[in-house]
Image 1 (cartoon, rainbow, N blue to C red):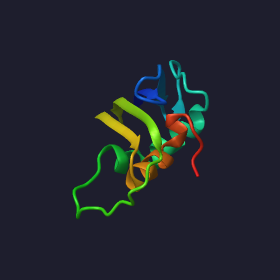
Image 2: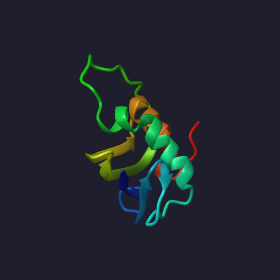
Image 3: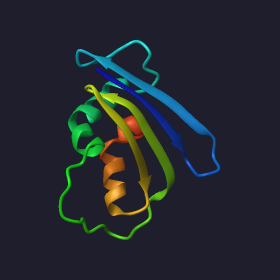
Length: 110
């Protein structure tokens, strides 16, 4: 079961947009408010484990580039595990995380 609340701001002082993704048996379920729930669910199933629950490892080298002021927070449950993740676009690593989860965060994966 997946039950996630997605809170997105285009800028720190911009209005917050709130969406929900609910999925059971591998399909979006009642209560889902995302515009493209199938694509969002596919991204969550593909990347969620690694992005929501990263394993410790050596430090990553991230390009120092700025992708924009957008901020998203994802909370809820992913296959029985509690999720509390923040997404930004403040460097290359964060931009890559955002792109991987773009369908969940209101964009298109590239």
